[in-house]
Length: 229
Image: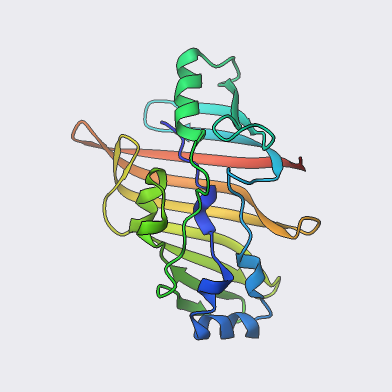
């Protein structure tokens, strides 16, 4: 399957967050500041090199792609496929990978609908906040996220954003696929030196309709070796 880059998963601005006093109050009570939501990796202005291992599994095959991201290259050429299942990628592999990853559109991050914030859970350990993207802010490549509900998990003990989850509220279109069910989890870690959150792992489960049949696809992306350019 063609890889969809989900680094755009959690673009939250402080200004949007401040629109919801209840959410901001809960964050403050938990010792979590709004600044942690204002930074995010994106292709157009990323400052870090990193490696990604993408494992795609369906009912008939498993494909492992090793790739890297080079922020010094021009937009549209920053994603580089190094190998497929341990071997050199074919011309078809390179073409499909380039089409799926190398966006030529700057500013790929979407804007969260400031009216969508909602406290879903608030206990001694976690604060869970749901949100939705403003559909008009999303580029075509990520339009499907406008039909998904996001859920941010804040760990009160570590005072950090731990992960974000997304589920679709209606069938969505991803590339050529008609996706009836989408369940995605994005895990983060905080880089103290850079003072920003970075993606550690993305795990995507999809139920795709192909030739009248429902096919389950899992795609796991593991990010590593972050280095500043």
